[in-house]
Amino acid sequence: MNRLRRFARLEPGERVLVLRATLLVAAIRLGLWLLPFRALKRIMQRRLVSSASHPRFSPARLAWAVRAVSRAIPGATCLTQALALHYLLTRAGHTARVRIGVSKDAGRSFQAHAWVEHRDGTLLNTPAEVAEYTPITTLGGLEG
Image 1: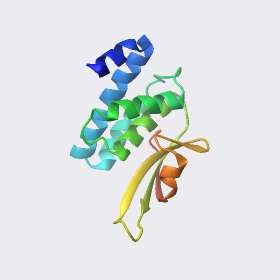
Image 2: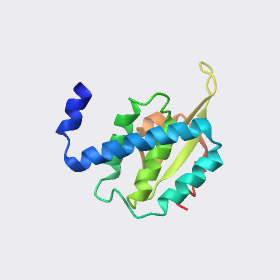
Image 3: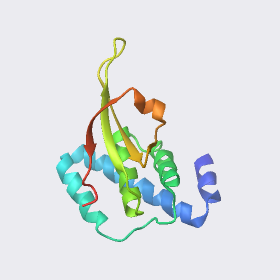
C-alpha cells in the first residue's frame, strides 16, 4: 500500500516513466532468462530505432526509476538494471555504456558486476562501489 501511495504522489509524467521502467526491467529479466544474450541484444536494437521516449528526464531520474522498480522484480540483477537503464538513456538521447567487471580477493570468491557509465560518472552505483571491479568488457552497440 505504501508503494501505491508513493506512486500516486508522482507527477503524471513520472508515473508513465515508472510504468515503462517496470515493463522494461521485467521484459529484460525475462529475456535474460529465456534467450541467448545476442538474441536479446538484437531485440533491444530493433526497439531503439524508434524516436526518443523520455527526453525530459535526466539520467539521474532514469536511474532512479530503474532502481526503484527493480526492487519489486525478482531476479532483477545488476545486468538487468544496467541494460534497462542503458536502453532508457539511449531512447532519451543520452550517451552511456554498460561495463562489466570482475573482482576477487582473498576473502571472497569470484564476483562479477555490471554498471552504467554516463559521461565521467556511474549511474545506479557510486564510484566506490564499482572501484573494486576490474572492467573486462563494455557492452556497446546497443544503440544500433
